Length: 193
Length: 193
DNA sequence: ACCATTTCTTAACTTAAGTGAACGTTTTTG
DNA sequence: CAAAAACGTTCACTTAAGTTAAGAAATGGT
Image (cartoon, rainbow over all chains, first blue to last red; front, side, top):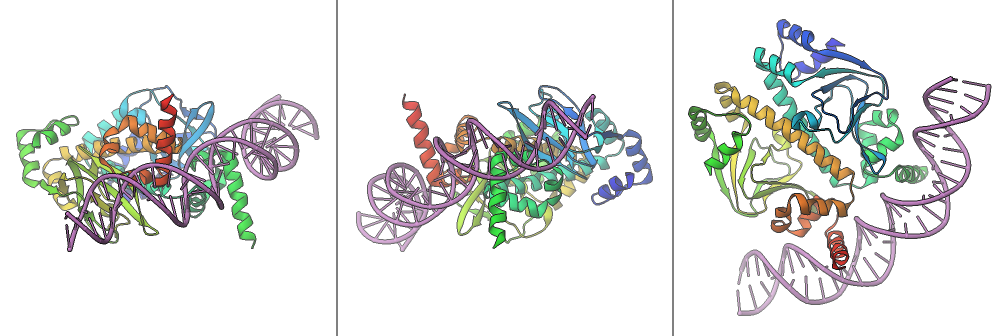
């Protein structure tokens, strides 16, 4: 499990043994059961998450129903908006499957940043890279139809379609569950020919 | 013009006079005319942009027509995806209005980061903050209809509706120019009562 | 193994966005 | 200044998503 983490980090900066130890001494690993809610709307929290195994999602409750807006799987990081703004959260975070997480918080980070400036650079690069990736995602979303978005997801993250319930996928694609059902029927109708 | 920049930075970290001088000696200010193309699809570039005054946009050309996906106005930064990936750009960047830009590149940044570690922290915080803001934007986009998105824009960035042509706004809202026209007519019809 | 709940699909109907075309208006530019 | 190009609106028609409701299938808990 630790190797997964260090292999990932080594893509960005090289760590000494001392630095690896520092991470392990500070990092808090959590095993979380499917369905567990990590953060609720209205709550304040300082926890950031890094997914080592499994899948978590963010969702809103609007007019009584859930709108899932993002999924985070292996080697993806989520710093909730409320950690940045120090305001109550606008959304929920919960576990789609049994998940192993690394949980961080700003105090712990500040300490590490002081001792090992390299980590500031690591976080800067990660954040910049995520930002660019996120922008491309958003661009693709804006410039394509629900059907194209679904086909695109099928290509790029087929794992999600396996492990995530349809109604959660639907709002992720920006449509209603019934529309996703219909859209899938339409596609498999086309593929019959 | 410099004051604008330093006022902005001072929200995140405090700079000594020496550090301010370092920025000014490295920073390259550019005045750019409306319509100028800063980056074309297929080109490689290492330039990042920080908008001091005016407005720039990113757009794709898909099936022969422009799809505008983002606008950057005063005190907003854009690091093009191709700077991160070192691959040819997928999109164009051009000036919506006459604009004053601060242009940076990784070499220059690396030098500054060495001399003043404080700038690494500044960039980390900015990137993390932008990432969180961007996520909320994306969430709002996914969970609302074109009409809601337009009304939302009217509230949050009324300046854009003033200075940006309708057909650019339309793709930014994820719809066709004709649909935006109709949608606006629908809204003003409602407001007559 | 059974019941309750949640999830997924289907269908009929409504609403809004996409499409193609026409037309008036504004802006550009030679 | 005049012609051309770009832009915005409107309209009729097509296509796909939203809505409401019902029932089938899968899942979970005891």
